[in-house]
Structures are given as structure tokens and as C-alpha cells.
Length: 301
Image 1 (tube, rainbow, N blue to C red):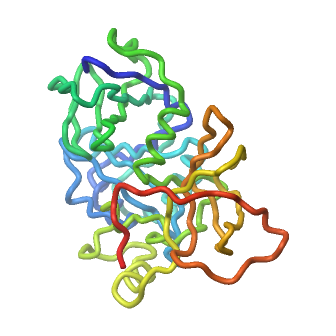
Image 2 (image 1 turned 60 degrees about the vertical axis):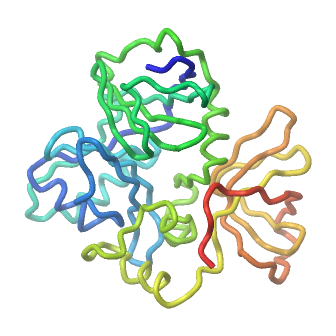
Image 3 (image 1 turned 120 degrees about the vertical axis):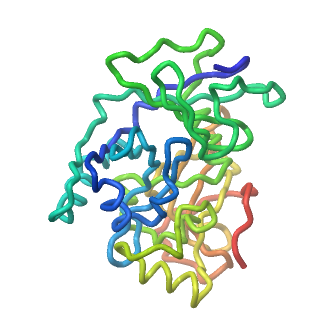
């Protein structure tokens, strides 16, 4: 697929499948992005929120076929999200199912950015292509990364040009790209803008109603969001995981969203924290000695 790519299995991800003539319409009323933009050649990142605008899960949406949508999210959340969404189906002609066992998910990383990708790999972020039964989604501009989904019963072997890539390498690139994820420990913890979903194009402010829209829209139009997803690197060896809480040296409390431990023991992570220093938290909150790192996008003022 690419002259110089490495491949990593993404076994922690699962597939929620929505099928039926009303699949798109149903999801349009539940998720934060505009399903009218979803197509055979374009994927979408969308949030599923509760009534308070807090993010239950993040979904990478792919149109498998008309009336057949695949939603990629952490496998540990697929069943709960399917059950929760099913309560709102009512008369809609749509079936929701945990289809994780039916798909093989992997990531591809371009190890040589200067090498032009072959036609099979889409070039633009969110673009979708299909090759040899696989669905391929471009996730990030640089370093180039793709998510691939293939029916598990006929999953192909790794491309001849690919080499084994550690899951940590994939996670570190996702963190460097400022891409949030929601896990069981952080589900319903953060309002959409705290995860920078507005910056990442995962919210359509001009679409119709969906659960949590009122809170998300109010934060967008009426007030500055004071806590945002930011990127950090610990100065010393420290193990962190999604959901961990801590306090920076300047008094800001944070909650870890994604984290990866480096070979030297330090930890690179994304965390939701105030944009400006505030009062110190209780002494019981663990201190985290970390320096800020740049994100590849600009946060709103």
C-alpha cells in the first residue's frame, strides 16, 4: 500500500454497526457532527453526548454502504453505547449491533513522509478509499497515519512493505496530533469543547438538534471554554493512564485523556486542564512534574 509503512494491530478498538434505511437519520439526531457530510469517500469524527453535553464516546464514522454505517470506538464502550442508543430508536428503521468480532482493525504509519503514498492510501485527512476489501481512512496529515478496517473472516496479511509497529508508537503519534479518545474511565467527564472537538471538526454548529446540543452550543456562542485538552511531557519517569488526576507545579489540576510511556520512563500525555493557572488543589491530588508541548492546531482565544 505504501513504499514505507509500518502496521500495528488496533485490538483495543471495536465496531458499532448501524444498518437500515434510517441509519443516517437516526445518528443525525444523536451525534454532534452532520451526517449529511458522511459519504463513501469521507469519514467523520463525531461525539455522542449526554444531556449535559458531556462526551459519552467519540466515534469515527465510516459509510460501509448506503444505510450501513460503521462507528469505530474503544471496544470497551461499544456494548454500552449500542444499548444506550437503542433506547432512542422508537420507530426508526435501524438496527444497532456490536460488530467488533466481524472486523479486523489496524493502523498504518508512514515512516518516510517524503515518500509519496500509492493511490490506495487516501491523501487528505478524513478521506476514505477501498482496496482489496479493506476500508482505509486517513487520520492525520503528518506524520501520515491511516486506520484500516477489513472483514475479519478475510483479513489480509500485513503488506509486504510493512513492519511490525508497537501500539505505543501509534499512541504517541495520536497524542502528538492532539487527538482525544474517551474510555470507560473518562466517559461523561468532559464537555465536548474540553476535548477540542470544535477545533477538530467533530461538531456541526449549524445542524439540527441532538442530545447535549444546548450545552455545547451555549459554550460555543456565549462563553470562553476555560478548560481544554492540552499536551504534556513529564520531566521524570512517571506512569499515567486515562482517567488519572493530578496537579501541575503551577497549581492547575488536570485529568489525563491519553498517555504513553516512553522508553526512558517519561510519559507523554493529553490532559484536560485550565488554560490559565489557578488555585492549588487539595494536597491529596498527586503532583505531576510536566512541561507543556505544542499541539498541531491553535486553540480558540
